[in-house]
Image 1 (spheres, rainbow, N blue to C red):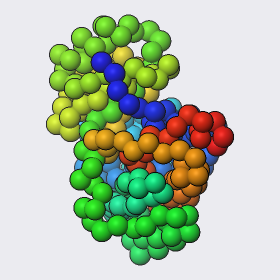
Image 2 (cartoon, rainbow, N blue to C red):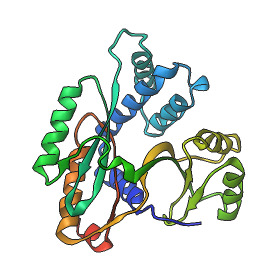
Image 3 (tube, rainbow, N blue to C red):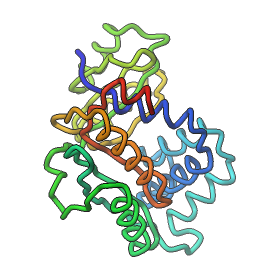
Image 4 (tube, rainbow, N blue to C red):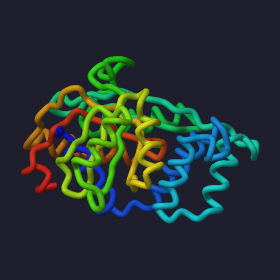
Length: 247
């Protein structure tokens, strides 16, 4: 089984090369805080458990993790973060979904609106682009240590939908929203290492983007991701290799 996951590869490699450690910590902390609203015990809260695991992989200090859980669960009396989603049209007709977590929605929308208008995008109405995406589970597994046919057999039995093999370093498992937890838990049970596991907005179809449009689009995406309250950015862009090399 195979499919298109070039954009996820770009984002992962970009995060490493940019070295945005402080920004990464901020987003991991927000995810822990949001996850902790459903319970402060990671063993009984799968989303929180994986958020904590991702924080530890990033070498986040234990005290930071504990404080984030306390804040998210309300144990320290702090105001809860609120999740939001914004829809954007980018250069080349690309559709973009921006997910946020904030304690000040007015600040967040103003910052996003500024970045979008400055770099050639347009903020859309609710539902204007989200219909092009589906919320699916994505689980990245390092290729080292497990054969493709064996992994395929395991995830198929657990209820997964697809196994993407475009990335030379990672397998990407796709699941439905409903089967995400069961597939992830089965991998954990079998001690198969998980690099990342999350629910993501996946486009039904992609739009080829190249040349000047690709350059403008990547600048816009960088600007949106730099907004403090932004957690995730998804697009239906298929950026050509030449533009990526130039970037």
